[in-house]
Image 1 (cartoon, one colour):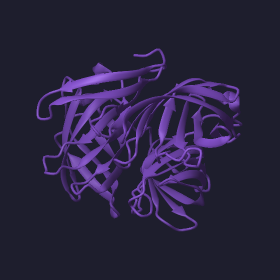
Image 2: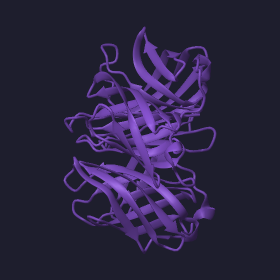
Image 3: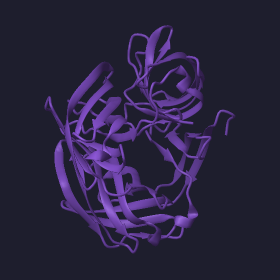
Image 4: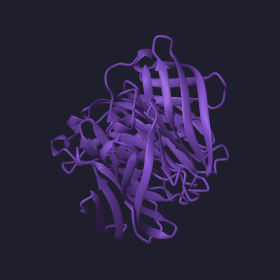
Length: 391
């Protein structure tokens, strides 16, 4: 572990898949969680979450209550596949719920899911065969705590589905008022053509008593920068939220975890997938970003997108510096970060080098931001990806 909380992990493994790989990781100072990316010349593109486990939750009975989940990856043909949903676990091996999925534009809406063999071993590894309207899929779960698991498809088909993501325990019952206030949305997709890596980050402002929303965001679509705006209405049913845009286009579906927090899935060909987080605070200034932030990129939309693990220090007065470990087609690289930043009152941040924007950030809270690289003549190699930072 370096002094800036960037770590290199050399992992050797056996069994059906034997070998070794190197990973770069960041660890938050506050809770020992973090992010991890592949960091060697193997040409694998792997990025995701690191979570500190609570071993007292390693039993089937601790997974009891209502949970929301979001998974993303590829189907047996290599097409992008995303899924979000919710289930109820009774603590004794039975799951039941619903989900929405987008498989290269083929939608399954509010399909039922169930399992009667969910179980968690003493090492925290859980398994279940889940029956969907379209068939059965085997999954493995790694328990983080009674309120969080990491979930992965464990198919025996050849080739298999490749799906992975997070499961979070839901709060109590939801109504239209469960969306009320400002949230930050993070979305990744393959764009309108289903072939261009595309990322979007922005602000959704919802009014619970009228069930209406407005949305504004920045987007990097295959290296072309755009702004997005939208407005419309929504309806909440058992934690499932459907947004209806006033300007048309694909519907977005949320599965709520808590107020203003959700997994998000689109109904478009490019398969939007991501999360929504409640924004904490208002009237932001440069002083809203102060101290050390550790970050990592979200799972890449395609193998052409690089990954990174970053350490950044913000001085609270518009200057940031740090270190970035990147894994791209040229292999692992490490470099210094030196830039300035300007915070708008709504939490949108412009990070610049030599006077030109290179990154847009959105403040989720003073201790958490999401970053979107800006492609321009100053920063022509900025891959469309989202990078989550935490203190």
